[in-house]
Image (cartoon, rainbow, N blue to C red):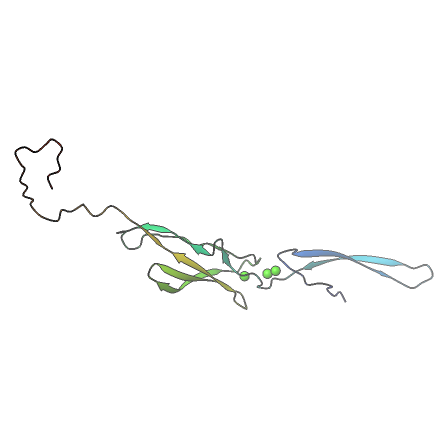
Length: 149
Ligand SMILES: [Ca+2]
Ligand SMILES: [Ca+2]
Ligand SMILES: [Ca+2]
């Protein structure tokens, strides 16, 4: 029987080669050896994480619907070809939202990333006068550059 002496971690070391030898008890002992290849199986022990915990993408005001604001990409250290990462907006409040990042392992692991959208001002308001028309009387002896009102 081969037993482990420590906890194995696929993501640190995925396999081991062991040389197992047997020797008999004869006066002139004989022995033979065999190579054993041990493959570590995956456990879902890594949480999918985005690079940053909070993102601050910006989008110009007055943008039409369906403008791409941010593409979230999470990494998961588990070595599992069938592993898939999915994203779900769990709460949103005004321009701030929380995205749940989940793997499809068993047990399922997840993390939360915040996205706070910054709305950029664009110059969409022309300056306006208070009145439609201004009537100003100028004294005949007004100096050059004198403010009128
Ligand atoms: Ca691991
Ligand atoms: Ca995982
Ligand atoms: Ca793993």
